[in-house]
Length: 318
Image (cartoon, rainbow, N blue to C red):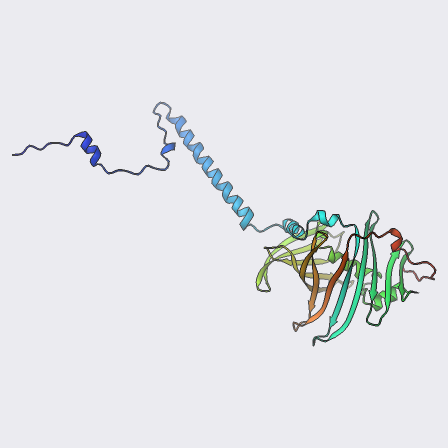
């Protein structure tokens, strides 16, 4: 009978399957003398790892998944439009706005061209408008220290009647001859005016717009500042205003929403702004278009520019 021979220790070691080295091998510290200390080190390592993972997760959520607040969205819209520094650098200038009005059948009814002149001063914004009508009339409407004035074909005329005849005044009893001009410039100043005191911007989710998801910014005001409501639609990839809704409350309290689509964005004098605004009839045809051109933010406008011409008997509206 053959005697069984036990393999040597070296042979046993060579025959044992090789195990995988655990990825936490470097953290496995064994100290039978100070086991509590080593346990605390393990807890510290685990806490640091969880803290790092949590920080990375929050950064990813905050930068890529979280919807912005209303104030943050306003900041993004301002940056996309050239930045507040570029807007503040423009203190005076002029631009031309051509309006084309169409019937619901698509027929061109009227073309009107207005040139807006503005100057920012310590006393507020100075505005003056020059209008050229289809009838060939040459109209100026402005305001100086004595009140509102207007001229038609270089003759002094009533500023209220003239502005109302050109569709420049709303039906409010408080309306003034430069009401529509001021509102047009206020809209042109978007989104920069959304940082003014009393503005309450709020993100109102997303909605489909022309086949893409657009972010909705709902803007209201403190009661002592204003009662109107504005809604802005922009795409998350560029934050440029693509659609504007103006909810104007009349003296009777009813709200009359107005939808304007902004397009043809181009940069001039550091500002990236829409050069074409469009409104539509309910049947989808164009109601009217506003085309912006001849922008000049460099030529100086003196204070005398906004004074009424001399040598006329002016009809003044306060």
